[in-house]
Length: 434
Image 1 (cartoon, rainbow, N blue to C red):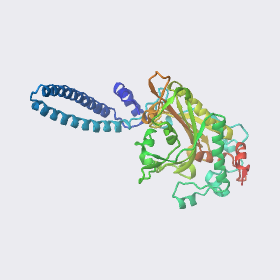
Image 2 (cartoon, rainbow, N blue to C red):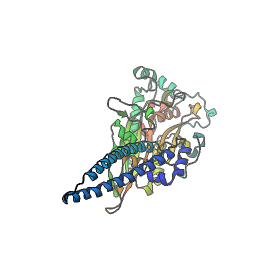
Image 3 (cartoon, one colour):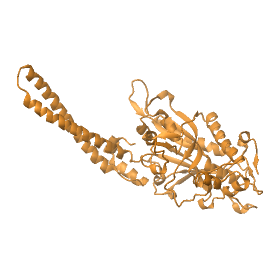
Image 4 (cartoon, helix red, strand yellow):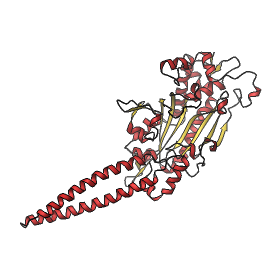
């Protein structure tokens, strides 16, 4: 959430941010309601001051034995007017709060301006260490590439047909070594972030309340993309970002404890209500997937350095797995509602021709104080310092659905088998599938 004073003092910046993000602009309506609210507050304070003065006068008159009926009648009208104004103020403040929740965060000045992903900027790419088959020149291959669906079905490790019978379309079912490989990926990534990158592991709830979803920015804007358990008004989480960020909702953190770095595994659930007509085969777009998420609470002055470190932590996963990838900086039109700056990490999956071979497997974002304001997460630099909002960041470290696609397709052999990356051997207990 943006600070109301900032919106009041910088309306054109807020308008431009909404325009560049392709979001609705509520600035004029917010300023109009804010002006009405301030006038009501001023008038209400004037009436309350009048009530206090006259109440003292009534007390003096009664003490002197004088008739104060006229002033008492006047104060009855003033009290009724104050109540009416207070009720109106509550309604206006609620309307204002709902509008503020719809205002997107402001992109960092370094973010490329563009309407869609075509204006994203590739920052770097990594082609692997040369120990696996290079798919950069597919013409040099002496066998036909199989996509992850074909491989998974042939090897008996993935079954989307039976998953559809159980739950509906776009749900996965892992079998045998496929289930073991999925678990191995999760354990490997958690261990890497714990022991190499210094994160603290948490295992959060997978259902959260409306307040938690609002704090991280999923609500109210993205409610149609979320599952909801109506009888309890609970939401299956779309990412562990939600419960992990809300760990410190309403708290004052110690400056000396920053940065706080958490890593969490969770299943993730998304309705993907706006995805109809998009590529949906196999793991490319699913309603349930597994993810390891990194979340940081940091001091404002270090948040962009921490963003770069967050991206490197996610890259380390792919380097260890020896999967080619690229890092892409998102333009304003592709930036999420809550983020100020974001890098996507796309893995290379050679059989996914429709997407140019690239699949997003991680997004690493800085939200500055946008989420912290919604969640009221603050810190104090020393006992005499004023309270400040922390900056929050999160990044996938990584989502296994797209990662599984890249792993199967990059590690396939001419015989239709799949070699297991070396770093996973101790987690799987096998080195090849098939």
